[in-house]
Amino acid sequence: MTIEDIALQMTPGIGIKGAVHLLELFGDARSIFAATADELVAKADLRPDTAQQIVRRKGFPAAEKELAHCRRNDIAAVASTDPEYPALLREIPDYPHVIYIKGCVEALSARCISIVGTREATPYGQTACNRLVGGLAERVPGLSVVSGRHLSFQNSGIEDYYLPC
View 1 (cartoon, rainbow, N blue to C red):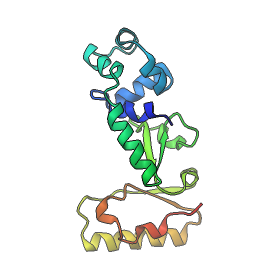
View 2 (view 1 turned 135 degrees about the horizontal axis):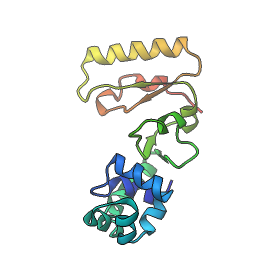
View 3 (view 1 turned 90 degrees about the vertical axis):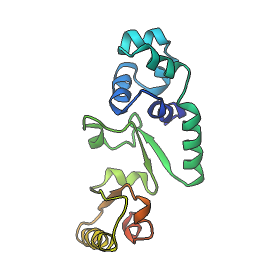
């Protein structure tokens, strides 16, 4: 994972599909940022203003802040071009180019269940989530729990079920 990987997804005008398209054409984020505006327009069929956003490295200031935050908080950023990136995730049409992991990166290769919640979890929702995840963790050996862990679920107990390395 490079700073270019994070900058790609933070560049104005480049969404998830755009990042995947560019990666398919150029191979990696460094090659995308090494291209000229003319190359980006001709090869990737980008609008000239979007190509200029890439050439001018408009996503880099935000990417540098993001990377500093990751380092301060022991968060791993994994790019879709990295060997640690989950192979099954790469198979969905709109896979995120960079995912952020707090904990054991190797656990992503294990059997996983994803928990999707809400920004404003109720006490009932937190209890139900904990019971569901706890029950699954007891019944399925080696299960990894994948969650966005929105702030409303911090201190809810769900972190008790993350796998140690």
